[in-house]
Image 1 (cartoon, helix red, strand yellow):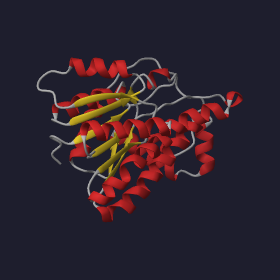
Image 2 (image 1 turned 180 degrees about the vertical axis):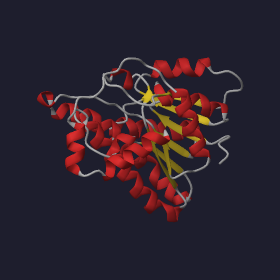
Image 3 (image 1 turned 60 degrees about the vertical axis):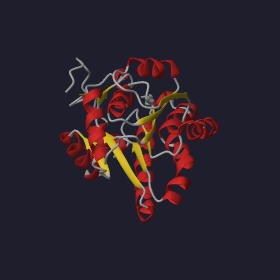
Image 4 (image 1 turned 120 degrees about the vertical axis):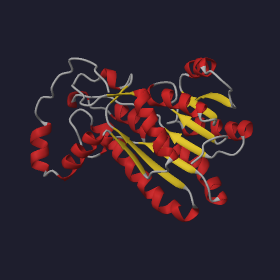
Length: 261
């Protein structure tokens, strides 16, 4: 797929993979609508770009808030025209001890990771179906396969996101609308910097964004990386519940460094 002059909406563009991906998309000649809660970082990013700049507009939005999403997408269409691709990358994490379990903590994670996708898809789906063109790219995680201790809200939100995207992919195929699920492993971002445990095969955000972009250009159904973590999660997925629960209940190796690929 040639991305030149495509209008791409990218959420979660202020840090991590989203930040790196925004720069790559600009180099591809895309017109961009960049969305994040921290608009000042987006503005600094746009000002730092070299070379000829296409139409790039930044928007402040909490993707978990339906009314904010609706307002921002209305503004994007008004300012930039028809949307070709939405990349729904916004995500939050949080490890919670069971004694600190709370609906508020769960709502924050699920609102962003799941309803952030639902809210944005709601704004483009009718247009995509009517035009019989368009692409939805949703970021899930390789952590969508099981319920890991202290990460239940995060795992549940990513599992639900993966299932939702799969369902959309099947239903939208007759309308020529592509749906891509992105399942990264550990990527060094402000989100993973909070994790206290060792994260194998940690990848830097720039490398992850390049894999992400290549997968979009090839219109893959699923973009997942790195291979060894993909393989490990497949084994975990098919592991008997009793064995998984025994393994998952053991203490995790603690993080000693931040070496990345």
